[in-house]
Length: 239
Image 1 (cartoon, helix red, strand yellow):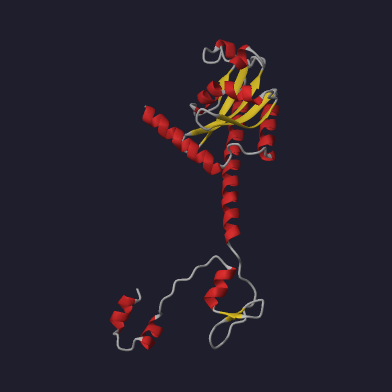
Image 2: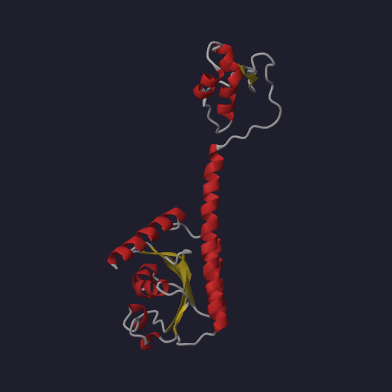
């Protein structure tokens, strides 16, 4: 069991680092999602949290005062949420032995209601939670739970899109596009650069793109350079 837990924790940490979301700055997309969650539930508090290992990271929140204290005491809520395949709802925290003695319940802000949707990878490994809280006990219907689950999927989709966007941006930085007409010598095949100087084609392409060259001989040139070698030997040599 411990080996499984450790493996899941390692996969969670690796995934979060790939997303580059831990300790990241506020972003409007995530801010809008928690605002929408709070509006749907008419709740004073909503938050997106990621769990690295023992440490929690508050990506964004509304209605939270004292972020460090809030993070310290949401550990149990997040762990229980990530263990659920669906939205976890606690209608009255003081009636639930898991949370009745939590400082968020016994002191400020005295949370009495909690609903959280896991932020999970396709294989079920939880990365955190999207949650809403209220200082009054309450009940929620199927519609609210489905909408919170949909918002959690939006968080994961946003994380995926940001990850892909960052990867593409890094690749673009490595690429220089060749376009337009290239003045090339009909004899030696050198190319004239923008400064008016003639360069070997491989030098020009290397300076203006991310392509790299490997050198070899085509069958025709190989036969010209090595006329005494048989066609079969040439074929083997230039494979």
